[in-house]
Image (cartoon, rainbow, N blue to C red; front, side, top):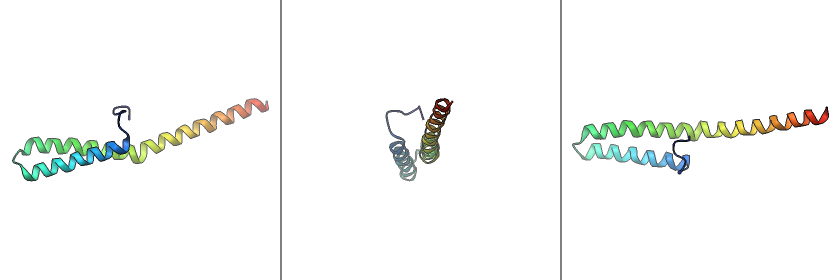
Length: 82
């Protein structure tokens, strides 16, 4: 997640999917198969990585942050009651 900080995960997802679509379109329209196949493999990896981060990693990080705050509150209440 720290790799691309200048652009949001949602924007990364759309950017990489657009790049994948353009690579596939380029494979259909040109004879440059080897560079297009390599580009399609790379953009497929980036698209899947962005999708996983968008759907699973980002919500998990938010949940972990919330749980840590709740744990901190519980510790504070425990120390206050003693």
